[in-house]
Length: 114
Length: 115
Image (cartoon, rainbow over all chains, first blue to last red; front, top):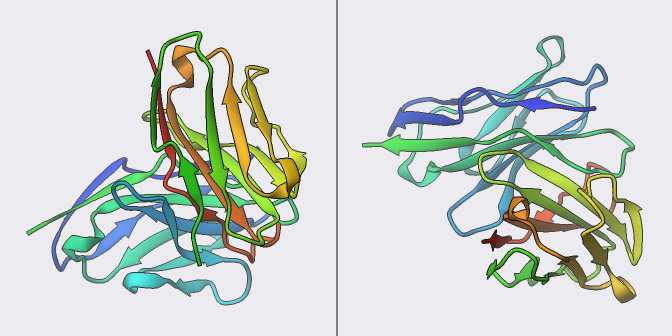
């Protein structure tokens, strides 16, 4: 069965600093890869996804992620954090051809400090 | 276009009672998913409908949980009788197609507390 590991349940950065949220998956066959964000009292919103093609994927709000097959990783980055980025971030995968059910990591709560 | 809606937003019930959660997907989305997040844990898949048919219910924890999607529109998830370990946030999502190319749109969730 698939598993997703997000290192760090809580990450704190200063405003303007680099954001790096880590995600590793377990499958030997590269799955579809997703990052979702949840703001307080809202549903999950898709930030970006990797399905095929270019391994550096750009998403909304200045976020991007790079798929590295050799490292089974899909880390999320943003060059400069903003206060509005404070939220919980979830990495998720789905098997290709598997009905698209998502397997999630445990989530990372991002705090942005002045 | 309205997003995925869920009702109620919060529910507090006693152990042994019954609760029914409702999800209205985005209009035209044949695929509807239920997920659950128990506090401190990851969001876990419960089941997947394609129209009114259960495509995959491998994540349903036990037979106290019953999901329906009559007419292929809204869905309900009934928990009967509720146990303490059923507490958590229940999310519903919908998508146009099963391929990972199609985004799953999530509702805000229903927070269920069983006391």
